[in-house]
Amino acid sequence: MKRALVLLALALLAGCGGKKTHRPAPPPSTQRPPVDTGQPQSAPTAPETSLSQAERYRQAQDDGPREALDVSTIEEPEPKNEPPSRYGNRSPYNVLGRTYQVLPTSRGYVERGISSWYGNKFHGYMTSSFEPYDMYKFTAAHKSLPLPSWARVTNLENGKSVVVRVNDRGPFHDNRLIDLSYAAAVKIGVWPKGTGLVEVRALTPGEVEPAARPAATVARTPPRPLPKTTPVDARASTPAPATAVADANATAQPRIYLQIGAFGEQANADRAAQRVSAARLGDVRVIEASVNGRSVRRVRLGPLRDVEEADRLSQELSRLGLGEARVAID
Image 1 (cartoon, rainbow, N blue to C red):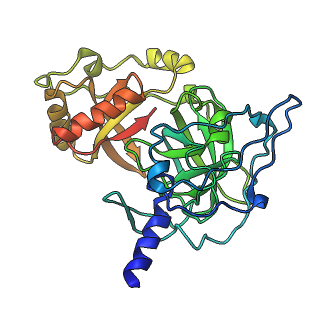
Image 2 (image 1 turned 135 degrees about the horizontal axis):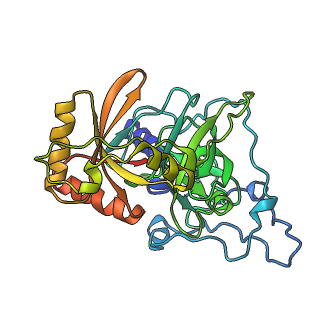
Image 3 (image 1 turned 90 degrees about the vertical axis):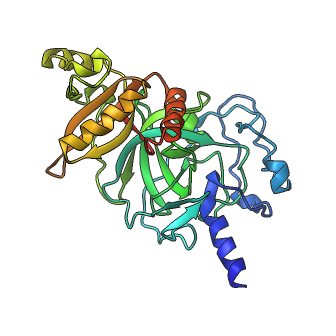
């Protein structure tokens, strides 16, 4: 009996990134009615939850609904005080061999990373908070934010944003920060592209939301040149003039890097950078930053062309024993 309870708990934690437990379809009252766009369109079909787990996962690619959807008519959720979900908040938890910690509170959480989305493949199935997933609502899955919580997700490539209610765990895929519902992904332009560079900023009920900071105004610190013995690309070792950096900021798009580590000691940062450089995977940069009044040296690979290159190089770094890199967006 005890083992059965443990397995059930893990299944509930897995969320959209793990394997869904087959459950009966939710009652009709939980289904979102068709959105009135003023144009003829068919109503969303009832979620297909009768398939077995094996049949469900034969669908290699997720997709959206067959009918058109005008997301501009969907009301964004308003942050409000809710009790923590009975399910999905246990910490630490383990999924696919990795351990994750749930934050004690969402207050002050801000992070940038890569967003993915999920849709019809999971529509109607239970989320980690034991609520039916509805791809027509503005919701999201996150690995560490408490369930439920609220966040504004901003697409750094186009400035579009949406408020989502986080009620699921995931995405359990390397280099992914948040999984948006189909409706939320359409709202900010992550769908049909598949992924997007986003900022996730937690919202606290009753507090005034801080003004958004455009991606193009983010200050870019010139990289510190590595020792001359390090075989790196000249572009990484020559700091740009301050005026040139300022001019680039005015029109810059967000740039994606892989961060290999952050070090307090300069010598440790240089050694890590030299190891990555020796693998000849691309430009290696040591960037000095201040975190909570403490000076750190971040070793980064990039900037990279796109998400696909970040995924490929992450696997290459792992195979070379250079550690587990994480995505950083500036």
